[in-house]
Length: 384
Ligand SMILES: Nc1ncnc2c1ncn2[C@@H]1O[C@H](COP(=O)(O)OP(=O)(O)O)[C@@H](O)[C@H]1O
Ligand SMILES: [Mg+2]
Image 1 (cartoon, helix red, strand yellow):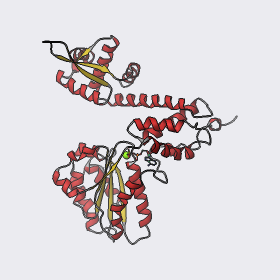
Image 2: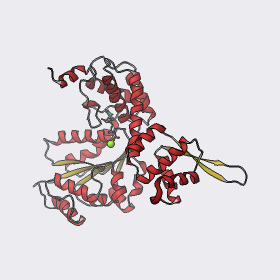
Image 3: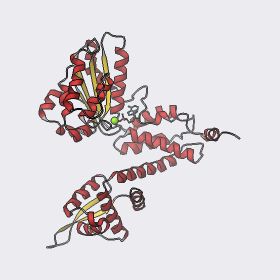
């Protein structure tokens, strides 16, 4: 009998290696980002003269290559400085994993060889331990530390700007912050902002042709020769260009299209697979959003779904009635429902429309579902 894995491996006509389609894959060259990478390098080059570089902030929407560019520049600087007479360390911190000042500093201390428990110490103790590394010249030579704080808005939102205060007040530390939101500075007090004194680099969305270049590079690494039909990459790129130039979405489309072709035991990846891939990705996205909503918001959605199924026009009053029915004792107040409606609208799951009932009768809000009803029902059932 043959090994089941051997059979499966033989059946795969599509991929050589899926890794290059993964978000974390760092390609050898970053296309269409020369300018941005050079700007980072222009500030970081100071480190080669033993001078702490200026702080940098990178802005740009999801999938515009911010993380990739920061990692690319890091790799280049470390390679280049390795045989120079300077001591540079770059620590990458994803603020979705380390969401408080304490956690970030503890992580940095660990990386620099100081043991700090993940909880239990006071913040002051951790700050001191961190600063001590620089004060005591712990490595016997001057250390320049570059800290990359990726998705910094998450940390600032949750824990305030203390981390920036501490890092800007530690000698020889340079910060590279990465944010998806242009207005993240409103989360930083002006005092902290002025000591941050950062240089800003903006990452614009990719156009369809740029996305296509990025994808063609990965196709060569990931797919067997000739399996990807000619219209696949242009279609993935056009779809992703519509989604605000998101390279991650473009790569997701390509990988999922390949998976679907593979599941169908097809010999080729076609534009039809891309269309199915788009639906599957959107489906998973809605399902994920719904599964992470707080229970009471899920109840609100359940109420909206019930009313939609009954073909009823949904006003906020009617929604509250239907909502109290599904949530029973632990229902929140009528006013909270308005916050929920706003949040659900921002997530794109529902839409609201104000209409006038005619003279003297005032205005009212009509709520409509913006995602597939069956999909919503299935997602709600799953998260009970
Ligand atoms: N210019 C580029 N060249 C090659 N690959 C890129 C480029 N820009 C982005 N990518 C790839 O697209 C994906 C998303 O990029 P990423 O840097 O994570 O975006 P962001 O951090 O802005 O959300 C990653 O897999 C990355 O390797
Ligand atoms: Mg990123």
